[in-house]
Image 1 (cartoon, rainbow, N blue to C red):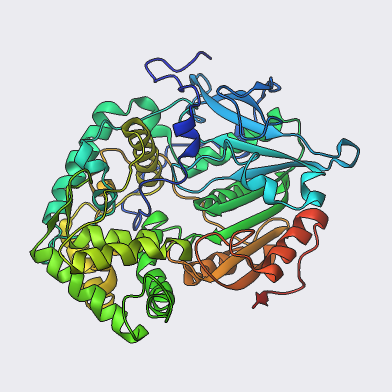
Image 2: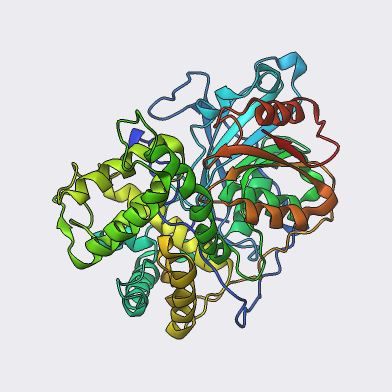
Length: 510
């Protein structure tokens, strides 16, 4: 097998690629509409030979000088024994106590479009000593994401705006413009994405992980997956159940096998309803320099009135993308800001400025090539995982229902992303998460999470059955473990990673 012809080589890791966190696209996928599944690459068929990794200094350095980097080669197409190879960039910090070493802990990033390549140096260092001492910390850039062999769609610059990648309807609720944009963006991905675009999927990422496990020389691997990484981790544990050691799924996706990421997009309806009251309480608290109202009950109607006004009368916003503050940009800022309380001031600042007819300085955007790469990985993964409806009428019905019930999100969570015009059929059916396999999974979930709401996490808990125990944390924000300062939740997860011992039953941490 040779290297994939015509695929852009993975770019060397630069500071800007290391600092990009999560995908610019979130959510996506729908009912299985005539899925064809010619792929027959079973779990056992994908555990082919993997050469040992050659560890070197990381190109451009790393936050922690102990971090090393390597390149893993995997088949682009696991169903083709003659498939060309693609590169997966990998990193590690070896276990700090070699004599007590147990194995490897894989840090699975969110997204799709997120990287954990620098996580051994960063979030991995938050882990307690008893975990860092006994486990190599492993990061990677998933297939398609630089500096692994990279893809992008060559989207128009305006289509890289988060408020465009998220499918916000027109002010009157129409989805016609979204369907036009979906066709334009899907055409660009088909034209510019190359053959690798067709082989981006969650199942293939799980297969890549198993090749990585083998290349590390590990019989089993532990994992800490966050956000979309929880779905990747669950799919890996389903395809390779006896290759798993200790698995933590943090901020948990709904594993709905009929909709997959389209269920994640729909989850924002409830996620916003769960978190907005927390924002409103903060925004009305006396002494808060960003206070918006005297009472929490006044913040919601204030936001809805302001968004409606900006729908009618956008404010020019030089340097932003798009170059105006309209209702959907405000709504997107709201969604972004509810990811964690530390972001609340950004929404309050924007609301306060808009009420006065002004705008704050335009937010700094990542480099365009990074946005293109992240958007391409997100598009390919989300659209290849499951088929989407093609009819605008399906989306219009959902948007109308959503707008009536969940006005804060204005119908976006049920609208059409570019997958509605995706030119390729999924190559295999989505992996159904079940309770078959070892009981070695711990879920940890904040009660108030805008991106992966508690209601979706319960569905993963139900699907895994006896395989899992769930720790619910009385916290607000996206990411639970070692992120929100909840001592009970952090202690429970750390104990499991260090000892393999979980609570006897589902647990609530105040």
